[in-house]
Length: 100
Image (cartoon, rainbow, N blue to C red; front, top):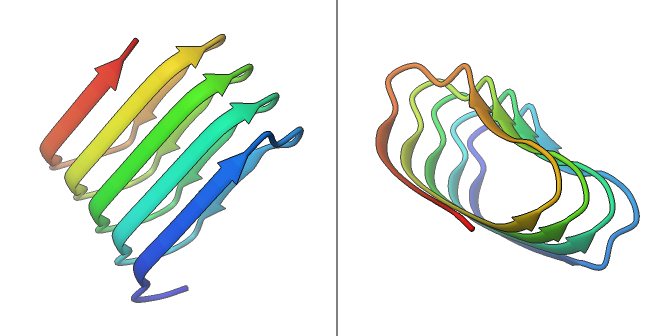
């Protein structure tokens, strides 16, 4: 999905993995995931801008990987039972991270 813009996605009560991958120049993403029993991940997304990710009540890992040049990233994670990780994000700008 090159040049993806204005994407909103809400996932509630999933019993499988939730993920987005291989989307370049993603802009204005609002992703809300709650009550999942597997991992939540975003990966291989160069140059993302204005990402708002809210994750709650996850019984797996939460990860963001291989996202160079992220700008204006908001991540809220509440009640995750496993790891929360950010990796391979060179040149980040304006990251707002909340873990509880």
